[in-house]
Image (cartoon, rainbow, N blue to C red; front, side, top):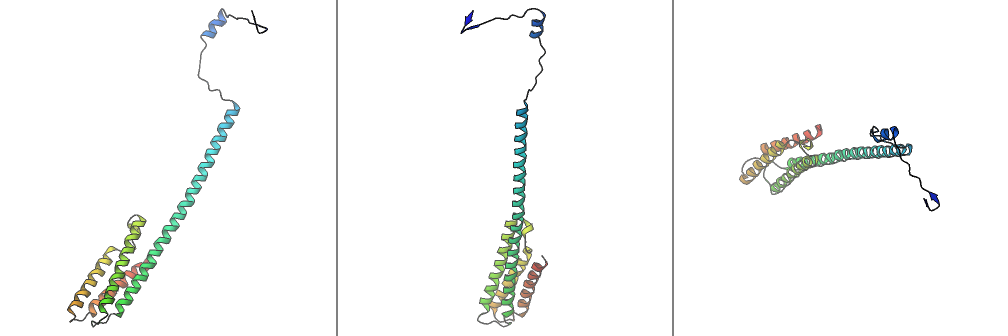
Length: 182
């Protein structure tokens, strides 16, 4: 029979060969051509290069972040040191006798103590824990108690404030010394 100018032939396999072909042992084989292997190697190489670039990039960002955190901590320390120096200056200007500007100076000292406490709190929250603490919290408790004592003495205005002023100044100097040690 001819179709389109060609003759078709039907082959029939009989006998032993056909029997063997029918029951041939089939094992799963992955036949990958050399071109496929080269393509897989290129893809694997590209993945490795991308991962290497990403790890280097993350390392650079980590180093920059650590530098940034250190700069922030130094800024907090410098500002706290400056505030403690200003508070010490205000306390040293207080007379042992109550004068008209006494309460204004005492209010400024209270503002500096509050400012330092806020800097300490911000440093803790930015560092993510106690590692960011610039000074111990008990410094601020003691300073606020000293300021309350000074306010009480100011309200009485009959007693000398020299001892309370000296105590407040000593506590401020202790706070400033603890900042220097860091």
